Length: 66
Image (cartoon, rainbow, N blue to C red; front, side, top):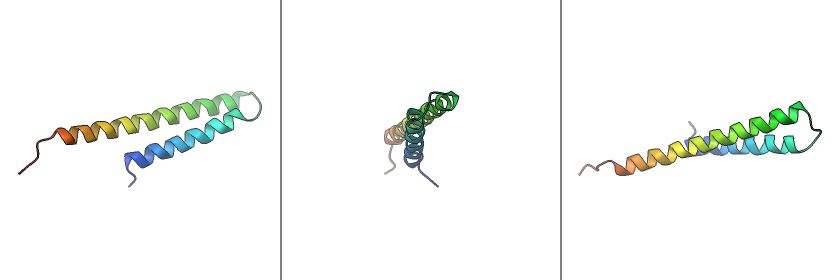
C-alpha cells in the first residue's frame, strides 16, 4: 500500500500533467475542465501531505514506553 507521501506525489504529478494539457491548445471548455482537475489534484496532494505531517507530529508527542 502506498504511503501518504507517495500518494501526494502521484496527485502532484497528475496535477502537473493536467495543467500542461490545459495550457496548450485552444481555449475551450476542455481546457477549463483540465485546469479545474489540476487544481483539485493539487489540493488533494496538499491535504495528504498536511495529514501526514499532523500524524507525525502526534506520534512525536505521544509518551514513549520505557
